[in-house]
Length: 230
Image (cartoon, rainbow, N blue to C red):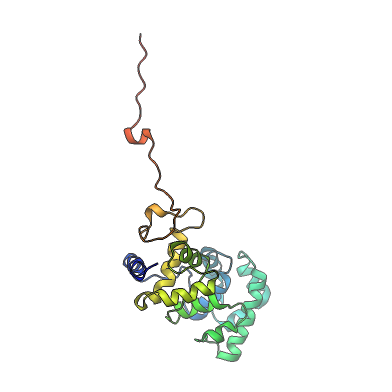
């Protein structure tokens, strides 16, 4: 994709949503970190339902540690892989207190040293909580980047590196959210909503979903049945 088209794509996405936000509910960087850990292979909606109750009673590392594994699992059992996630969350809370005074660290290396935190999770926290222009490549961003031609790559790391290289500086802070929302609601996996997509004319996807056809009845209105001869 040429730089002019790439710039226009992000110009349009910014015009439609100048200040995009994560759909995960949180009040502190720590709560964001826990929500992102829980969001692996789960929807933001399901995570928000769980954390809404959890954060009412335990919204800090010390408070979650005080819950213990059984009570923590009770709050997050509706989320997939909750047993493993509970174990990782408790270990992460302990390390945050031991190494960082209970605060969420600002560096990628320190974040990735926490149990249950990989590169994508670290990038989300750095971007959302600390406003760094990182690129957390999830399934939506990977699909959109390859399908549209914005930054094709064979794996998430390759896509991340190309996005950081190709996206103009003025768009980089919010690009992560624009691409996630585009993939979540428009450039969907099975049936992309190409006819309503704001970047349809710039997208390099060859098999775009066509606009729905209008049948004869819809074009001309209902057909009045003929009267039978008496």
